Length: 218
Image 1 (cartoon, rainbow, N blue to C red):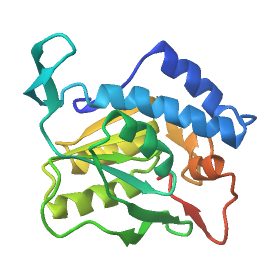
Image 2: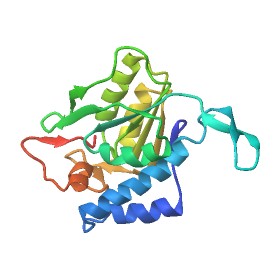
Image 3: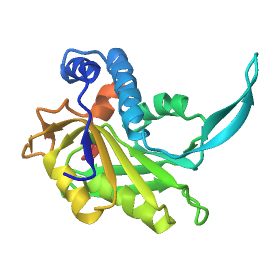
Image 4: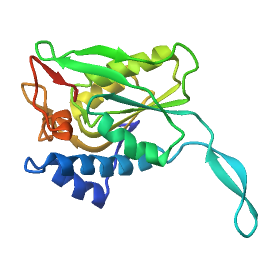
């Protein structure tokens, strides 16, 4: 499918297998999310434009390169937070804008509870990060907010995606790009990805769902 990139790499397959394992403790789970985020971001940034930059090495002057666009990292709270720092290490001048969404268990619809995007001056490229893309509801809500902000290019980075979520995003945002480590075939009756890895937010932060809402991995 145009615009959808499933990154096939031995390191990704290796780390992803351990990430899926239910016996993996939260401390290791967080580290694995970070490693996979770096590998995913490497692919997702491979075509970013650069501009020439004159620099001085210890020996001589030369022409180097620097990223020429403003990049925004947009983690969907809370699970998306686990992907921010490793990507920010690759692009330390990126801006970080948070979107808080949770999934209503009765309707499976995302509910926005936090957004601090400014009204003007959007970034050139927004990278929405969330470990899981299940139904696509949270991703669509985030992308709608970014479009209203005026962002011209949106890239969605997810460690695991369900085909249903990918289809939903591409149907509404055909000009977006999706980068994933793996595409799983289905959702269960609770709309969780199968085989998946469970609830990414709970596994990252070592928590259990509270009340009738689940932190989004939607």
